[in-house]
Image (cartoon, rainbow over all chains, first blue to last red; front, side, top):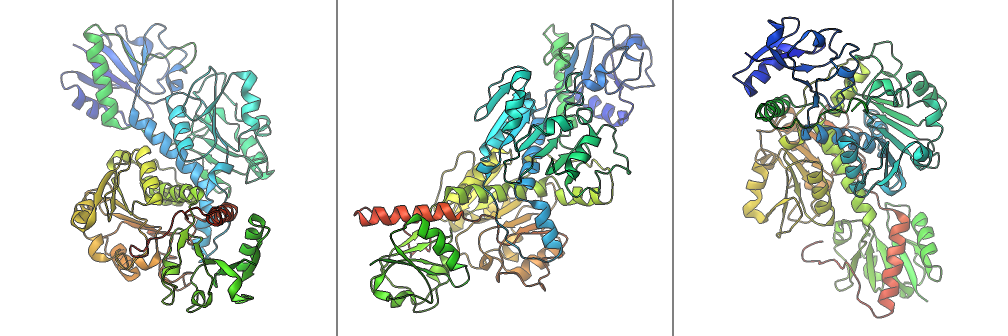
Length: 315
Length: 315
């Protein structure tokens, strides 16, 4: 007997199990901590697994990551060393992330919060606006998500560049690569968008020193930060200080060091912050379950798993 | 001596004249009502010209329209019959209009106003969202502006259709045409975007009867209206009634029957309305002046004028 187990303490595992059962009716579904006979567990979907849980499964064949970032699995210090981790490839998630990024850039570009305030105050003020060609956007992280967002920003008319660890090629996008080209990338960027994977290298990368390297010659006089990657990449005290000092003009934050964000966070009521609750790109449950079922079927027929995570790179 | 005259009572003609002087330093600039010797006026830029003013210019060669819509000129009952009207072709204006349309669609699609309210109330609520593939958008009017907006909405992943008087072809967009296909276009449309030219045929076209023909099977259960064409195309009492009756889910309105919109209008404070002050696509003054200068130079060298308005069609 082959069991599919959810080890997702912060999610509604029962709801996920019900969806997954629909995608693979023959398999037994279980939700941690009710694991049944651990010898039966061949497949796991994990998100922030507690220590020693995955390690306790003697016949575990594949770990599935249901989100784009696998840091929530790699952070388990007791993670079994040789079990492959498969990241779900969800084109729907890519589309959603690009929607979020294009929406956030356009809200800043067109000063939507100012328009909102004018509507509320019944003020008819057609203030001058700059052209998209005047606002240089830059995407850090050119994986599937970053590349798609960059391409769509370019279609909208923004001069678009990207930066990644290794060199990438994206249509319409000037691609910078590696530590040596980071400063040049930042120096030409009015709107910095982070879609970096969460690795040790990117922890705290969005800090005041980096903000100070961004362009100050754009239409707003100071740069704008959009983070939809991971909260641990941002130094939150630095963002508040940079906003208050005018070193950042505004920010759109979807992720935070600790989620859900505490009511005491200054971000909620900061006039220069557009805040969303880690909702930039939700995965579609049906799409994900179908993908996982297809991967297992392929694997059991003797095929190779797809989208296997490179643990050394962290993504 | 050849004079360029601005007849734009509701605009700051002096500021425009100053910009235009920069583009054609040799020519005399005048601003109505100070027309100087009317025999010298060879070229006019007009917007809502008072009756008999253009008719009083014996040597008028070309009338320039500085906006995308020429209804503000064609509405002059005393308009000289045979003087060509040239519409300014501003690629920048097209880009801006598409920014506005994509921004408005994304704000509704991603429920930005709900996110705004949650931020204000410090509520962390990652509510379920639908995919772009579930929201069918439809663009009425497939001129330069409508076609570009439709193409960009399609790139963002929305199933996109368009409707125009005569059949058009736009990449990625299902194009409906003519009165006989209007109902089919409306029946598959969750988000209706109007970028129609203002003609007698389109006056009041956005009325309750039309709203009732839109799809009700979309993710919001009722359709959304986005009008960035002309205010005279919308029956404003019908929009309010349809919103209040749930026949429209929401609306984004940039144009109004009377502008600036009166403080007494119910749109300002309507919870389902995103209101902008006819700012969807401002023309860039420098771009426009350069275009007009180039057209005059071409015309005086014996070349054909470009973008001449077809008065029978009204655009």
